[in-house]
Image: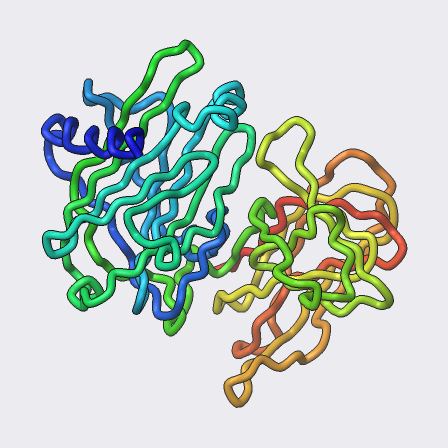
Length: 363
């Protein structure tokens, strides 16, 4: 508790050094946010990441800190991601004081606190009321999402409100020096281009083309006819089709690139819808492996408020037998203006590796 209070004392110690107040927007979402501790909600990708933090010398800190916020009808959700150095992450797992972030939000004169480390989340809310779905860690960062109820504060859910917000990050660098960076400003309630009741913005019509964003299968019944390997991971933005027999889909990290992933498809197919309105589309992807890869565009139309499958629009067959990544490109045109197309990859007997898959509209 003493360590916990010390961090919050720093919030006030550095508040007068921050200069002109800055603002972080809390964007409105029209349905419940489901934080997962890994910044995997696609809504987070819509929110721009600002360079909010400064040291006491008014310079940018050595370590990057990302803070984003979303609010819905009953909860405010903070997403935090803190970059680290490899050796410091190892130390942090044995000593919680190596890196920590303290947040104070003031609403109607009442202060709400929470603290995040690579190991845990603490707050002055009862643990039954704060929703912190774990902390995700890699060798170079840790991330958390904190879901906070603010009961009785109806004003918070009105667009354009302003609330004092203070954040302090205390980090021990590899050279043994302690770095303290902070944000002292306001949280503003704004609006979000992506909500559940409005069309996606152009920036969101194609999601997770780099295949680096994924989540763990929530339960055994979800895509039960698929073997997802040891990680049991699914790609955000992509869908698994019903495979003949058992589909096999697995996520792997590149050996020479940390936090950069690709997928291996051994049977079955997976696809993603393109939400844009353009009639002509271009596509690119990287592939390697051994076997026959089918690249198809699936046709869908909305009818009676439901998505209806209308068959395969085009199909490209590629025979692969190489351990070197190769880029493939192509173009396709919709048959009707009212239909949507989905890029689909499939194989039956091969082992195909795929990465960097994108679809773009052609004006």
